[in-house]
Image (cartoon, rainbow, N blue to C red; front, side, top):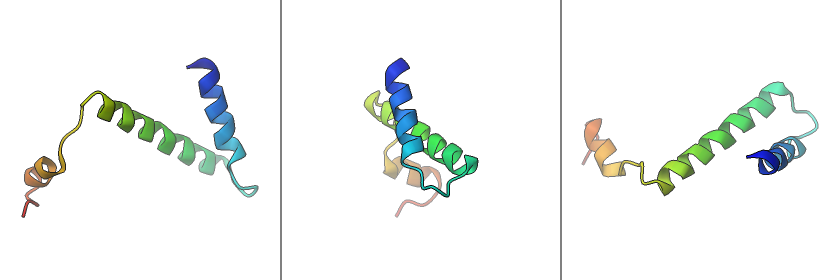
Length: 61
């Protein structure tokens, strides 16, 4: 992680508006982390196709 993590963290802070607060930073950090986790799951084929999820919840057409 190291240097790449620090660069991403700096970018998150730098992209915040001047009026941002701690909650804004935390929200963006969590969203970023969740997106990274989702992409890693997708790359590792740890995903469920939409049709299967719809069937599981009784929403299949």
